[in-house]
Length: 166
Image (cartoon, rainbow, N blue to C red; front, top):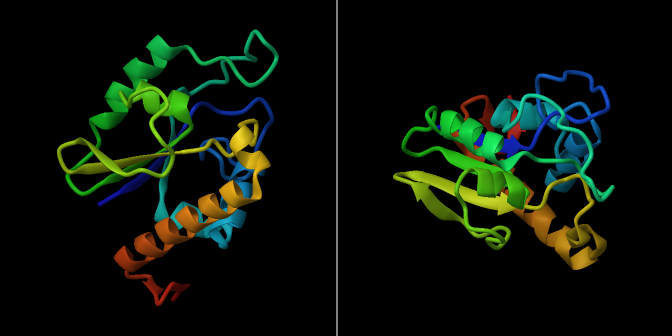
């Protein structure tokens, strides 16, 4: 069973390892902070993928990045071919979720079965452009989600015992 975390695309700023979405940059550091673990633990437990393999440029309104939805949907269909029964998919942001066929504005942190045997959830994108991150209670809710997700993945990996790397 594989736990995937899907992002939109590589960012415009270089990271330590551009092949690993989120990790090695500010978004990965924020996810690790929310989960209460080091980024290396996230990399051990989750398979990170971007829907797009290039930075599409800024959005026309100056806030956020452009996201070519038709191209993202085609890519998402290919990415879904790797899924197996029992896998989980975490979509970072509503645009990513929509690329995978999740209804527009599906509630954050609500698990559902997208395809047979694959559980999916939408979480706020860790870029913090979303107003979600302006509320302390929302940040606490996200932290609770990520801590549980990490704990559940640790239980499935033999190299972790009691939540600690062995």
